[in-house]
Image (cartoon, rainbow over all chains, first blue to last red):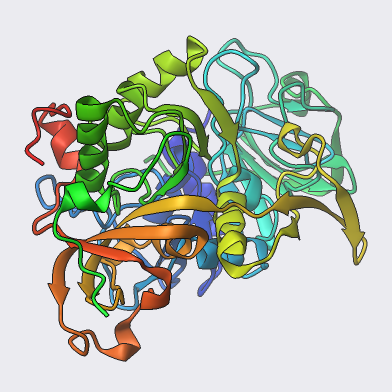
Length: 221
Length: 244
């Protein structure tokens, strides 16, 4: 039993306050926008220069001048703003974004993140990830708890090339919600069906406790 | 003063071997497909320009625009942040074969380096890339207790850019997110050539709406109904089959 990407996205969305400015990484983190709790309005930022864009248009209605950082078509909403790339990354590095949610290959208990390169083979590509991990007030990661081969992705130290040092503060995994505090993983929530020991065995660093651990309960999505 | 150029051929005539050329756009949005194809036309006809260093966020998609420029063998080095796309086969094959050099730059650093080049700022410090492979060899300094990496400005001989409206003085507007890197590149190149959907008389663009002031623009050429890279790629188009 583990959370689907939609369910991880739902859980991450519960922590986004009304009025927050949010950047969602390409791929699974983009799904967070679908699960905004009723009564809250977040404003989404995309690196290529839009604030406050809406969902994907129906097929055939795309305007290819209106895309997100993943090069997917989006739509206009009342209050949308366009800007150039230097302004866009001023929003990122300048501390103006409230939340950035990214994917991860590996996260270390120090808050280090590796999410851009799987090593020397192939073509390296970094995009805006190295900028996004610096500046947003809260940098969270959404990731499967283990790799496809069952190896831990939450580690004492990252083995892959780093995206940023000591930047991640919360991990929404397929099995748990874990904060990074003072260079330690602190378990906040776990799937109720999972024992602490099993979760610890799936994690490559010590899980610390700081108060009660809540049940990670997510709707069927 | 009239910065209007007669046609695409004239627009790209000054680009010489070995030059650094900034090409606008983020993926296909804001990409000056017609200017790029005109440059390839010149190379096909004359063997020049070649050995170019190209600055763009990406590495092209499919077999049109920037991908076609790379495929033609005109690009020696690419400076970009994200050389992947839905169909990056051209760049990927040439890179893995060692036929093109890559300088990988984080996206925000790329934007700021270009802005700095246009603004006369030779270097700046950014938190981005600190402690990563992309900061290796770069000076680090601590400000208010936090480490920052020194990055250098980026300038070009030419910028090829797509805008929406342009007047004869070079004042420009852009369409939606097609703005992206384009205003920055206009600033950072010694010669900026812009393709616009429509050339208008001075005064027809509301001064409040001008995004790029004409001082940053040297030439404007009209390309009505410009091609969109995404639309071309969905149709399986290739350079050479696309009418310039």
